[in-house]
Image (cartoon, rainbow, N blue to C red):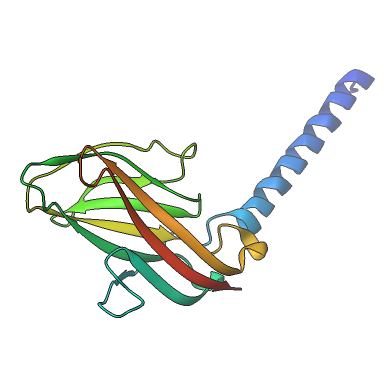
Length: 175
């Protein structure tokens, strides 16, 4: 069977495109993919030490190669009425937040505005507590993401006394 020139050119172009796309997918999975997929994230509970307060957690020095880390914060509604969390978002795409009530996931993961929806509808009764998990991926910025990082998880509420809550994490990232 003899192919005409146009058919041969189209066939060569198709093979070239498939080869290029295959190479792109291979490299994306090898170098740019989520290297932590399938790995468990170990939550690190806050302690009462000077470096780890109720709204701040210092991971110390962490390595990109060891994967994601997380810190758990607790918020208790001390008002006499229920409050509602309207928005949850983070200061960077390398950080996600999840909200738990009685160990049940109520919302999330929430991320940086523009990367995920910040809107939530979580009610917290008077004297009720929630846990805020801040998950940080030290490899998210690649090799140039080493050094000191400081990130924030924001919760916006309908509370008149605490309309915006901030939970801060800090680390020194190494390769």
